[in-house]
Length: 450
Image (cartoon, rainbow, N blue to C red; front, side, top):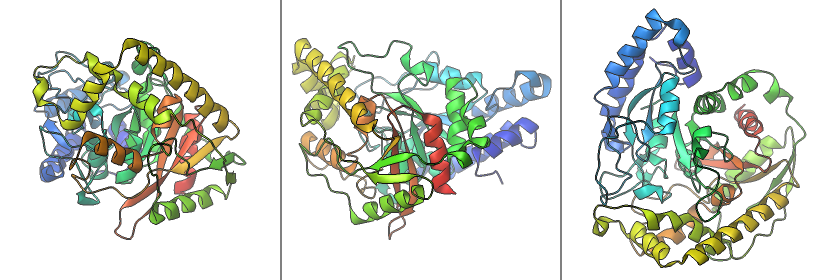
């Protein structure tokens, strides 16, 4: 029986108490048993060989062991892993086997990770649900009729169901935090640049907007998330910080809470009673050691328009094999991006930077801003895709109204489970650090779970 803690599993692998082959065989068996969950779209046929090589290095060259040597995990099907196909969740591109690792995969492999395969995503990572036209949808382990979120939905389902011990995800508008909250996990969105592989090509897109997407961990608890973040960065900091006295000493922070969303100027945003109750429970726990007060925030009314422009701009440059095979949402987003002039794209980039500065200005009156993680429980599979692209996008904004603003601000945020609905579905709280203090957020997550 393997431990539920990834940190404990890492320690057992490092001591030789458990071999990489034993751990890898266990998780491959779980993946096979739970295929109906739809978490995996590709399972590696080379995983056991990789585990055997990890065990050989352990026996012959123990000085070469990395932070997660022999630890099984997976990557989203948006990341290249050498020898595995990358589909981007789309039928419009050819699914070729990657000749080399992406920068993130290479970083993890350098620390000894064994890749079990690729997990389900929405087409090009565009959605807060992991459904597409090429594979079965990723389902929520707490209720398989419901969504596991997106775009790291396959990763979250795999971690929550015990198919992998922890999972690296990516977050461009909530894509780590949304599925983490939907599946009852800790999900951390680091600040832009905290993970070096995210900014190898700079901190801005070609129009001057801040890059929205960063890599972050999905895990059962804050310690596991800290281990994975250290591995993604290639340096030890966050796990030693949490294992020291910092979480116990952290106190008297000024925490401002809010249910105000920058999407309220465009859509009706309502937090369900159960989500509000869980949010209040999280605030109560935080209030045992910190000062919690209402934050009166006012967001720019043109945020929805500016964000949508920046979010979709990259689609105009996609090289597709068959554009007719795009899904409804991706086709509509791509059309809009192609109709947008370079001048309009540059103006949207300038405006989103101004809005981002205003977010940070307002949030910086506090050490932490707290919001509900999501506006309600995970919706049923197929909830978003029964109508137009416009309706799909509106429903996504209403479900996750507090996430994309953090990406725009290039700040750090974490979602932490704090309760369940009457049906046993996870509910959580989001904590935002305007000063991008990931260590503080991880420590607060640990405090909440104590």
